Length: 277
Image 1: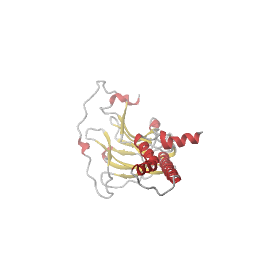
Image 2: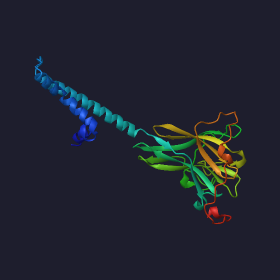
Image 3: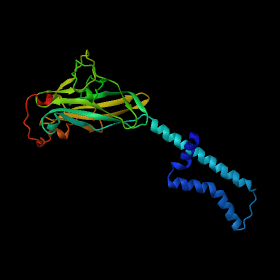
Image 4: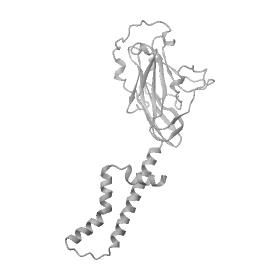
């Protein structure tokens, strides 16, 4: 019974009005042509059962094409695909959004396929500084945003994760800066507790350009490039870029690096250590 319902859906139930009309015309076309020939006195030289045969052939062709189209749709829906968002800004505490704060930049990954994506990882494949020099941190993996409260060097961060079903999302931290008390931008690498990694970059070394690559089992990798910088007012910023600068050539500085300080949106005075509460 399930196969019959599936075939009914493929051939009729799941179709729009236009495909239904075309199919109906195709099936009754032999009958209409025969009737017109009779009406205009045109002698038909083929036996009547030929009409039945032609109609059956048209029906078989329609079934084949519809089944092929449905198989193509199902394959496309199950093909592993991931979307990388533009940079997402967040602060601690949240009430300090437009003031100096502990500021994070992350990206959101979304599963666009109907299947589950296993063994997902986010790796840095390019990292170029303001002088056009390529960094040595190529291949570093980034951590899940839900682990941002754990300390580097004291916690083993997860390097792989899953996206189960269409629309499932996960947030990946890329960089963070304590704009009040800190001088170093912390790259949010997914390191082991015992792993010694150079993850702090002085804010004066920015901007940096980087490319991340998202991989998963049986999926073609997806990449996206960004520029991270610290504005003249001390705000960490990260933007999507269409192309990476060429290594060995000093790239032009981002226009936003000279942006004006945003207006204060709240009146709560800054207290030392407030961001860590």
